[in-house]
Length: 170
Image (cartoon, rainbow, N blue to C red; front, side, top):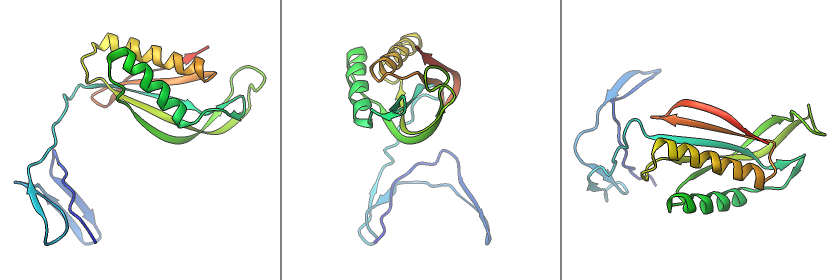
């Protein structure tokens, strides 16, 4: 059984396949539901400002070769700190797998294949750009210390485009 899912296109949808090319620009109300039962509804999409600031923090779950962290640990700490910082824990977590080469200590030069995650946070609750950056740097350092990480990657974006990237290190 299929359903219709509302969506928004800011530009016409264009396609090209073995049968040719096409273009579609939606107009009017969207329908959702099952065929024959579809209901009309206005598009609920509300765009954020084009220059919305955001960040990504990348963390691995192993410590000196041993799996010691899971995504629930990370979610819990991020929620607590962001709630303390701005009163809202809003954030998104993307579970992933990565490869990391140790740069110091007893495992220097060894390659680690490990699970990890990206933490994505949007600056949509009134923090100034400077406050947001300071708060995220504090959060990243707390994650690094609490989970005994050699390094974390922090990337800041404005309007979805990177403007700063760096490491939080010991």
